[in-house]
Image (cartoon, rainbow, N blue to C red; front, side):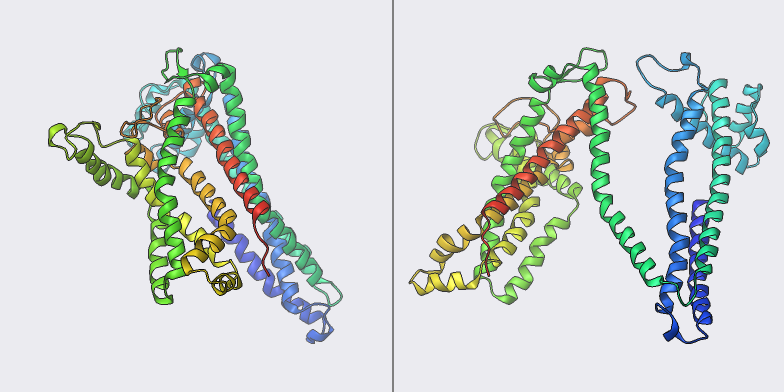
Length: 492
């Protein structure tokens, strides 16, 4: 049974349980709700939760565990000679799943029966021809061992889905009956429901923490595999980034880290002055009508997709910079310092524009949090409005402003699409902002794109780069929180 149908059955049974639980509780009290320990809705909610929570819990665990168990069982059927050298069974298992999907399509189109698809047949050539008749692209290089593994995969998957349907229905019905039995006037339904809601809220609050831990562990394990194949000294202290799949790659993070920090620095040079000045104007000088119009208009920049910024960098900012710094004698400066539209300056300017609302919005909120009494006191001592802003308001809000800048820096370091389209793909050390460079995020995308071997250092290096980037951005976020908490002023 499809998972959607299971979900609808569970929801329907929970709705029925809510109605019946409420009615049964009222019936046990002779129709007088005042004789009940809890309100009638609590009894209905108890039945509904008894159906929903165990059923969805088993469903989620089952859907996570079944693919892993099936892959482990099927991978044991694959002969070692079918596994390419210096790789894992992952590539072969992808073929197995593709063939299994082809068998499903063949059954749906009537090219064969379900029993034929699940049986291990020796007439492999005839079977492949029959699948080809219905347009199932299994390819000409599928071996009989892969087909048998695919048939086993399909059988186990069907068995697992059937068992899932039975188990979920039994769990839901058991929860329904058990909760319905407790719908009596003396039962403390409110206490049970409130404890259940508390557990659900705690589980929801834990998802972010568990997700972060899972992301870190997944990158950490693959990074350990990478450092088992490649020298860590070359990764952290080398000076060349030159990946290839011939076994002599030079995979140093330093050129990528330089490009990342250089582009982020230029982006902050654009975003911080503009964003901070905009925040000061909106909070201190602009009237209510101007503020209500200008601030939402400024924050629209934060909602523009980064791919749009990348196109803007590639089609507008880059060619504009080429007209100024390139084209030789035909350029505005009469020199040719820039050979193409992609450069560090192109990506930095556009990324800075993207970061303006991050800096301005956070700084505006922080400046507005400074008490009006401090402004009034400064003005009362004879300071002008501009002196009050420079010497009172901005220093009081400075820790929060620094935190906002560091958060914007974290956002710049993790940007990908603008760099891909605006900065180029050359990893090197250079201080010339008119040259093309690349960043860590761009190389992660490049190394994981295509049919890469996930057991080779050229592919696994993406996880080491990701872990390093995670540590870098985490450090900036922690530093921002530390500055804000240590130096912020507490106002009444």
